[in-house]
Amino acid sequence: MFMLDLKKSLLAIGVVSALLVTNATAADKKMNIDGAVIYPVKDGMYTDYAVSEQNKKGFSSYGRTPTANEIKAWDTDVMPDGHGLPVGEGSVEDGDELYESQCAMCHGDFGAGGVGGYPTLAGGQGSLKNQLGLEGTEGPRKTIGSYWPYASTLFWYIKTAMPFPHPKSLTDNEVYALTAYLLSVNNIKAGGELIDDEFVLSKENFNTVKMNNPDGFYPVHPDRNDLKEQRGPLAQGVRCMKDCKQPKPVSIAAEIDVGFDPVISTVKDLPKVKETAKVSKSAKIYEASCSACHANAAIGAPVLGDKEAWAEVVSKGIDTVYANALNGINAMPPKGGADITEQELKEVVDYMINSSK
Image (cartoon, rainbow, N blue to C red):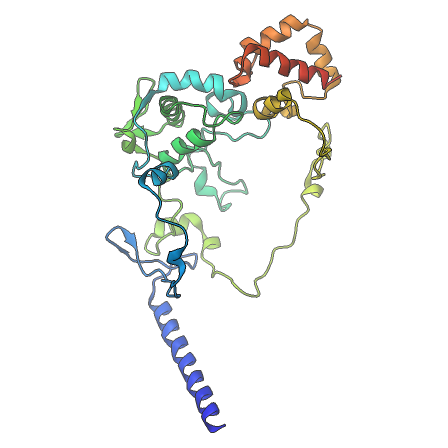
């Protein structure tokens, strides 16, 4: 019994000592204005991160070391230092044409914002200064020119996720061209000069591009008094991990303006589909390449299932409908931007018409 009590006492002393050392270490660390730790930088790397000391014995018998080709296939990201950039080039002029055919229908002319809630890509410079409401309540306009810290993020996103109906369909040269165009409409500089219509972006000159917000995603160092004033007292609190005061819940539905026509729905239920129902090839093409516009009334295209809208379309004659779909009309690119045959396109048009009767 005596030995058990002695062990408990020694353990308690050890815990208290450890806490004192931990608190002293934490007190010695320099904290930034929002309470986060400023880790020292050594040899281009953040230091003082915690290291896992758990026993890893026995795990080496599982799996195998990946081959160099497997690693290369998985390593698809493009880093700020240029790692991952493919060989290629693209001009602002070519990017302008590509943007008009592949992007403008959602993001608007010159990236100024489209309909249907698709993000605005240009403008907003200077709006980040007011992100905490120092001058009104409007939040920052998070465009390429005001918010994105690295051009590599833009290139990688376009390459892997755009165009929305058929991502990964662009060549590397087309991605370079679109990136160059979007940088130009945001008044971004490369090599100290504004990117103009004659500019050609390539792997060789990519790292000369300097964005407007390269430091906006890092903790503000206590010595940066200029940013302290900019961000204001709202960013100078202490981080809360226990018994935190939670803001009062706000009902989004209650804030919706009743003037919307049609009224905005707050129902989140998905339509019930019979498990035995067969999905036609035309329906699959529609979902992959057409639904982005023809399932969103805000875009302006006739929505699937809208009898009146499609009756007006069909009244022009089926040959005209086919021709418009094939060659493009208004904001719709030829074939809707889909890589399909003329016959497949006609079948998709027939599917949309028959589904809207």
